[in-house]
Image 1 (cartoon, rainbow, N blue to C red):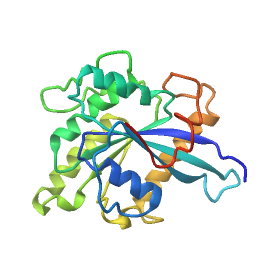
Image 2: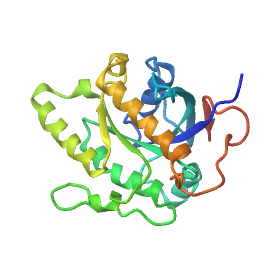
Image 3: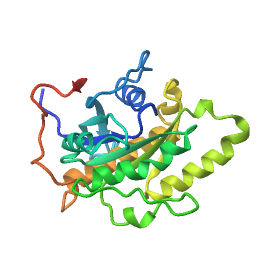
Image 4: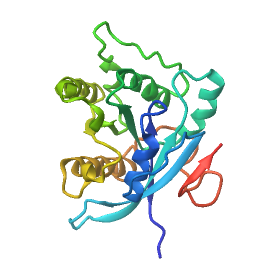
Length: 236
């Protein structure tokens, strides 16, 4: 069987927002029974059909790099984490819909990944909105995913969803809100599944069909990290 081309997508967000559960759902189409804290980085692979149903259809591997830690980590931890930010083709920003702080911290996570050689400021204006100018020129495709949708009380749902819509707009990204314990949120043909497919298509287009092949600069694009298969690897 011929080897498939692949792209690298970071999955970033605060500890406890459900990144590991999300990655497992995306790659295995199953609910993760006993999620644990990610130490370092965990990588899983999703098979994606680019431009499915068209003459240009082609299958690719999507490497999803679930990066552990928190934005409050010591500089030494951030420096170690930076090695995972090389040659990135896309970023999924994950936040907990019941935790406003995790939403605000997405600014710092994205800044850390996109500006590896500078200190992320995470500047917020007084009303809590993001400084959207930071991302106006960004060419790396972004997707914002909110988790724990099932835990939002009905009286708060409208307020939370309005806030997350503005959040995604600030990142110039589409948004998906879901419950990682319920696969129906990503069922084939659903609006969420369409958004996810559109995001992966965009990542592939930027990597393989864009003239400047926009990706975060780093080491030459590599098929392996530390040797061996990338599926379900855990880096300590």
